Length: 232
Figure 1 (spheres, rainbow, N blue to C red):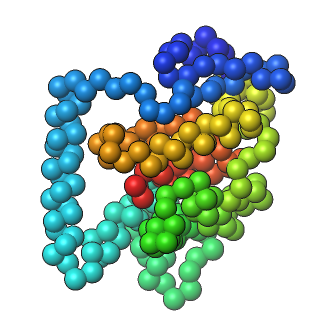
Figure 2: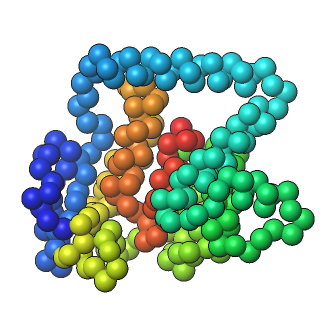
């Protein structure tokens, strides 16, 4: 990782790891935000749209009928981060089949839907937390790519993002080493519970970005990053 690529001290610091490579340490949440006119207008319009959707949901005997298609669309789009090629039609056809396909891409998207529904139900008895994120990751990775990379457990070794055969020294991005990762996750969890300081959409965006920067799992971080934001 090239330290020169990261030059916003208010957002991060570059750490020289014991292995001799540079790693990215995200600044603790929350950051200082400037609410300019464009941001305020965007938030106002988004809140109005969400209020309209919420009102429609309350008119339905079973609001899940309204939510379910959006959950599946989100599952398809987010799974593409990890390279799946499943379409929404593929997923819906699979759900109505008596015998479900063994296609690996569809299984990944199916796991996404299952984990999200599980998380929404689990929130009845467990608050949004690192424990819940680990539970969601375990379900997300069950029987698919990366299922041998300690599903449901935060990494204990260094990972990195880069092309095949890259190393921490050559990869474009190296997330925090394990001790710094644990500290960053603790700060992230504390921020989850600051519910009266930021608009919900702002908090969702910050949680999403910070989780991806921390990259706490050996695999499936792109698939599991939703675990923070949609459930909020």
